[in-house]
Image 1: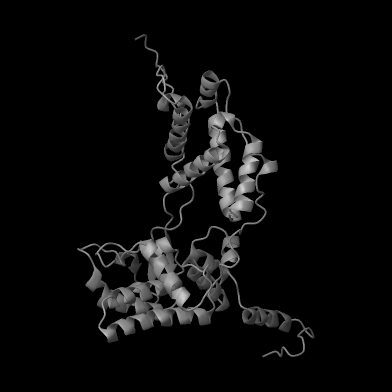
Image 2: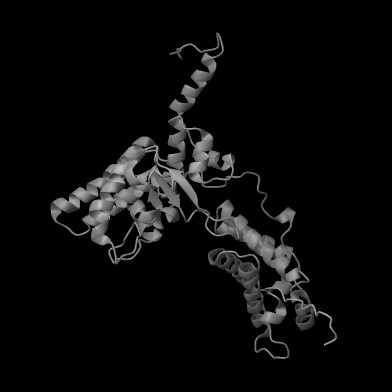
Length: 378
């Protein structure tokens, strides 16, 4: 000890020295190194960037698919091989634009990771195989993100008539089971209430599934809503590398309060497991799964003959659209949905022709002599 402080350089997550043991002969060297690369990349994303396990798993899966398609390892990859994979995804598998973009992002980031001198993989490949990874994704061979919304245009909000038919069909199932003395009336009531809650508070599927009874509380300005004046959403959609983003949603639909209060008082105790506070229970006494919600929605949708591409998320789109049509301020709707940008809320909003005509009439009515014939000012 000479009195000087020794600075210890921490080894970054994903480094080759953390995932490959030096001086050990590998039975299948190429495959073993590739697996170590994936382990290192996953560790770098989880530990260094704090990404969710699901996101990391999807990206690793995309890299594995490209490796199998190219029948080559990363130190042998080329832009030409990547182009062939993209062609296969577009023409053979006909993947949607968002999936193709996610696959491109995964390969680009994996190549960036391997080529970075901070992690040592390029030098390791040069030493072992006489070659090193290169970036195969470039601006000229990846999809340009020219618009914010790349969702399937057939996924749309439900009209008010379709929404009413959906709720009526769910309620009819409860009555049918009760009259026939069949099991499952409580679960049918639960499903009918869950669909109404998703719509009436503009929730994503996971946000709704993860609700607890304690997430609702009073709004002193609206005492008629009882304990359901506000909803605290604790499992909002997270940004990359961040925990779930919470938000508070103000209750705006009185009929939904009546439906939820009736469920909590009369039905939930019949299904509740132990003393846990989950709002939605399965028949086994556990928290209801998102898959059960998706399956139930699909069953009702198909029975009504609606488009098969409609999902529970369309109820959230319907909520945004109907609030705008009912005259709510767009900024208020944005806050209710938890969007950082109003442009995102605009993607959700598909106002009806009647609403658009009403807005047009109001605007033209303020300009003398410009109101078209047949659109009388009221």
